[in-house]
Length: 164
Image (cartoon, rainbow, N blue to C red; front, side, top):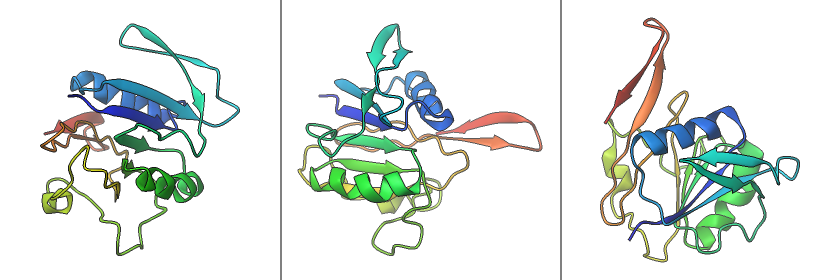
């Protein structure tokens, strides 16, 4: 069954790119929470021909969420990432908040895919992963098997390149 998912920082540029990549890759999700600051809460975002109301990010935002993609800045990640993990959510963070934390793997799918070994949805064990690809764009997780997609901007060619 597809996972209930969330995007933290959905109204920002990377949050919007998360939506684009998820759509491009037919990301399977049962439900999708779009989360942002109090200031952005209440805004409407259209995604895959559906209208979503952006919710304010709170400590209760991760109840019944299996995967959360974070791109809302380091202070938000530091505060809410561990809360989400405690609730059993797999958190994929795009900030530098955990860059120096030895217990949180930096995942570069083409370099160290083993960093994602043992991650299973519905296990009740949350996990925090950091992805430092600029601009990161991480997309698909299937319930029993992880598939990672990234998009990176190639300045020399001036175009987006996608690797699977």
